[in-house]
Length: 275
Image (tube, rainbow, N blue to C red; front, side, top):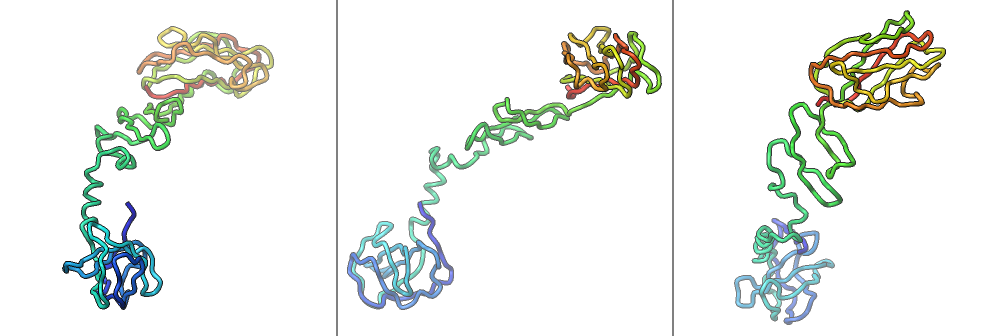
């Protein structure tokens, strides 16, 4: 239904000349206070047996283009000086009521209904263009992360965490050995990556590190740094994690399986999210 316009300052006017039942152009004595936009409603001969409601669709001065006999009335003849009022009619009340009570998708599909959400913290998101959806609230401490593989493109996860551990000092060349460092996990963590770095690169040989949880390795392919490199991110063979779930308070040990030559300042990084 098209929007109609209204004015609270429209002055009562009259027809400048008589009209028959079918003309679509009428001239009034004044348009003072009438709406500046179209369409709007006029009532001719209000409260008389000849009452007719018309819709004004355009205007040129005091000459108005109208649709005759609307909202249940009929086009009839009116004499010169017939009263003309701007006002409302039954349709102004019927149409919004019909809209509110129409539960069809075509009418209400543009709205997000309150029934979509079920609990405190639920989010309204989308699964596709013009397709709203509910994302249930996450657990305490989780953060919202973009995830293209999820239906809504979002997922609740634990916050990102990085634990960096010095495995040697900066001045002494690495030596091999088990449990070069021992520490306990400060929280449960889902591991997504591991890294190692050196402050002084090995001139030959690949410094190799193993990470153990409770005495058992979590790597099926150990963490290495190529000769003359300071970071594992450029290693020819990337580390492979076989156990991604590190428990809260688990004992973690780091071994140096291969020391290389002259390598110093080793650090190992656990990268992931709080579980």
